[in-house]
Picture 1 (cartoon, rainbow, N blue to C red):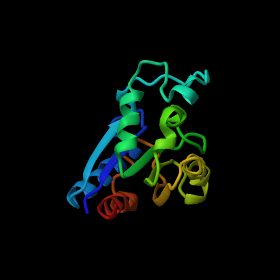
Picture 2 (picture 1 turned 90 degrees about the vertical axis):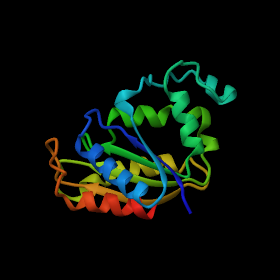
Picture 3 (picture 1 turned 90 degrees about the horizontal axis):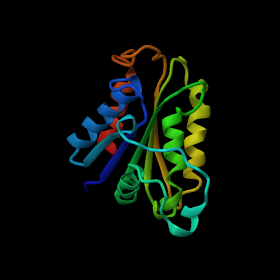
Picture 4 (picture 1 turned 120 degrees about the horizontal axis):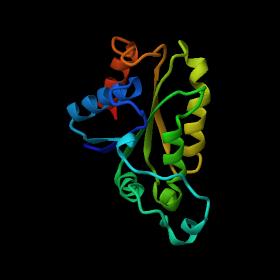
Length: 178
């Protein structure tokens, strides 16, 4: 059965290590017959959450930016892939801002399957677990969210280091199985 897959790449660098892992997941998903789309947050205009609280009642943000379109895509997706480079053992700022801005419609994001993609200079998974826990904290707020897999792109410091890394194959396989 074909699924609607939304891949959110928060890498500020097009072709950065986590972005390349997203491309592999995308190839696998499309190759398996899924409808898949990758969105690069660096190409979107998304303001920081202002903490005004209007969205709690209005179910919409007062800010007029690209987040409203992305919220529609998140609600419509069956599978959501969240990808980040690991900066100082946590999510990059672009991903954190994106997650914060889901508040107006996060309660509509029910029963979604999630995959996480990380790329880090750290050469082992243990150093990346804090970042995974940040993603899991987000999922704890979503009704029926199911974590399906994590791609650990360890040992990728410079742009392109991920090429030839086993994580590339893992990302494609997860995309096929999504």
